[in-house]
Image (cartoon, rainbow, N blue to C red; front, side, top):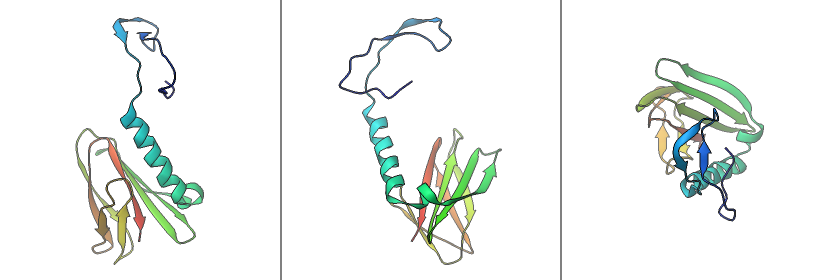
Length: 134
């Protein structure tokens, strides 16, 4: 469904996506947490040209653990996005250049340092990380 804005009035939803009637109406309201999350993602994208213009390279596909990672590279800016679609925390090892430091733009600016050309990171269930090379 579309973004729900606080300056508009919405009727309760009485139908499910397949057009059958709900047992009871679902109140439609603004989800401020989701709105703030979208704003943060937009800010990260706007501040990092690699996420807009960079080359795209898939660097991890792990169907068993439901992990996916890709690299965006533009004008010496490198960003790795790792997504965990699993219902459990997953640990990922990503190959990176040796002796590099990466800042997590999505999760409180945590810093990760490569060890033997890899970084090892735990990713919460149904979540991700956006790592920028420092």
